[in-house]
Length: 168
Image (cartoon, rainbow, N blue to C red; front, side, top):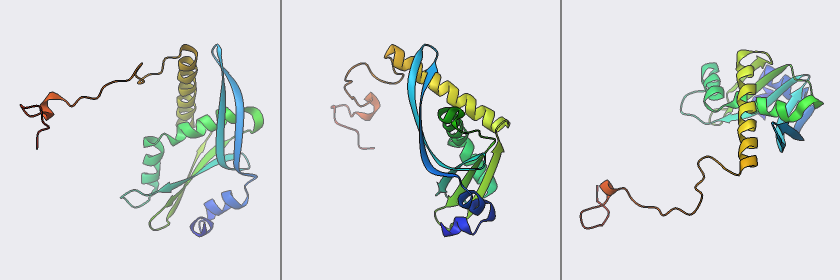
């Protein structure tokens, strides 16, 4: 917390927050289905929805590293989903991520406007995921889920000629 309060942008988001750790729930109609959605936001300051992220990677925390984390971990889709769940309860104009490195407590704050390419992609990702969830819930078919118990078997190349596991 001290590292965040030492960073001007992060301190502003935290100290001026109108909401901290609030849970939103909403029934959403997706196609022919109605699904229950739930999201816990870290904070809202003005019309900026923000999310706190800890970083424990091998590389030092920089703006470039934080941007890569957003893309690789789909954090933009996460905030798009949060906005979807909040619905019209809160008008969001921008988004922010507060990254704090676990090792040396460096802080990086990144922001994106609601209409930016990053957030449009995040909202599309969230909408696609909700549509897939609604489709699976309606059909009872879930991708990657086996219909019954499956017996595990080692691949042939791992077995020695006598049926024992190979030692390499």
